[in-house]
Length: 376
Image (cartoon, rainbow, N blue to C red):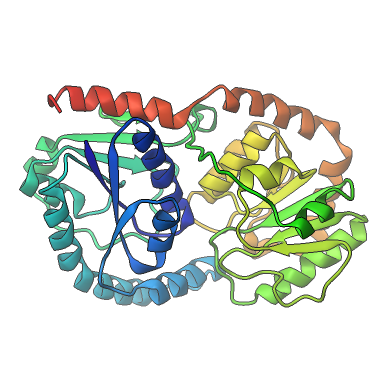
């Protein structure tokens, strides 16, 4: 079968699609991606045919991420974003309709407003991946909602795959029989670390990994200097994942700090003593898999809910909202996690449960059952 995969947003909005596409390929199916320009290199890296939407919204996405991070999002800026996105939606619909005419299944990011229109026009089965915590939609990718008749919404063939571990969905119940919880999606990668990174890691513990993922900050140098000061004060070593903000790129070379670009988080986190992250879904999944305690610095959207649920699991220290982040409170939070064994024990316990799940295989079985109903 041929699957069309489409998503907008940040790395956290595309990597679950990559993981599912790899699983589909292993099962003998074909996956073709349709993406905005700034995401195409990711699917191409994993060997998938990729159709690029002829539009450039990367600058707008990055600027909107800063608004979210720095708390400067206004209604006027939302209207400006919506006007821009409204211009691109017709092209996206046209391109996806053309692709779907020669495909069997459409797989898209949950709540993209045009998916139901395409499904209604092409009659192709629709599968949505819900990669944000239920009830939260990423403002950075929330295209303007479109008028879709309620009877169309109710009639569409739609399977929703919630890509979270049930362990993190405390108190959440499925919205309908069409929604299934799969567990986190993990991507198996062949990775050979840079010799410099490997030598740095092998120098010994304790090692703190800092990553704020795809969040974008007005002053990344301020964060860089803060992380260096924290590591120096605690007499630890730190790996700074630069992320979309390029944190750490301008600091001088130091014996106790290593700055890296993309490194598979499951590999990197497994080497850490503690992880400092923003609470994004994908980063959280890798952190839980690694079985290492964490400090969470939520910035926006579902990251606060995720941080609170992690706190209930007792595997993270103090939650520090980004707007309240200071050298003092992150130093105190890390000091506590590094000396209390209870955080490590809780993280290891959760890790064992997480590793017993197989999100992409579970998702594939749900997809197979769904498509069997359509004799596909």
